[in-house]
Image (cartoon, rainbow, N blue to C red; front, top):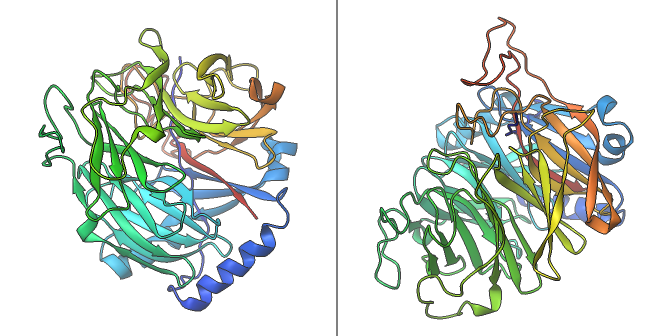
Length: 447
């Protein structure tokens, strides 16, 4: 039995409104921090509770002894909710995904049960700006040049863009850039959302290439759009249907001119799946658009049978690691040969059912961290199938072997949120539990 999903919480901190001095301070702090690449933090978010909690671990302490590592814990309801209420008039719910700005001066936090995107000054942990994009901010991906963040407004079925100036601490929603994936028509004249081609265009993750121009937008119902995210409004340059790219992707890794994108399970129409596709980045035009399903992606591997649910990914040397939270494995893609190089299990003596979800590699490449889902997953779990249910919620530490060809789960930093009433929160078909902790968001930050 396997399952997963997580996101963590944070400490009460003084709210600081964005200013030029805050941005300059962030830049100077990052410059000095970059001089010691061996020092880093691991940020994880438990998405249980109304707003969630952020856990920040020292990397060295986590790898030395994960079970005893003492994190900085930030209650997001105390630290972030007040600034969101003050700036948007609404309260954020369920912190779900976190990424960092190009220089790691800011954390970008997306709330999946509401539309809030929060910019947090990473060194001081102070929230600077809260923007409510609407229905549901599943993930917010920063551009490599630091000028924008692309937001997947999942149930709003919108792709949105926020302009960013990290030096001055100024962030604003660019309404003119929005792409409506529910009502638009593709450049080839097809409906963007269509019962056969793309039955559910809720965007999951807008995975950006290293240039920051192309966004690979995965869709809940299957299919995919390659979008010029730098244009205004953002525009589709390539379209794929559900038969070509399966549903629920979120992991993406670029190596040279190839973008690797996964697809997974956890929904009624695709409960058990794990795929990885390879797209040729050189085949997308700077002007104009491609015909449907071109260039055709290469299928690196496809698991249609058995208990599988692919989600997070990380770059480990020449390899891309892709977590399978249902199978309790990590699949390995050789990015030199564009081939499936095997897999290894993370289930064992430390956890019979760890349910690895999102992955992030340490700067030195000797460890990979995994968010481990809890027994009461709040997102991406199909009751009865229970693809995202785990028994040991927390942050897993995986030692890298043979240059990335394999790994071993060597430690777990536990995260718990017990319901003091003793009431079970487990989904139908899963073992009873009153531990509501559900880690999902995970990222490594150099310090």
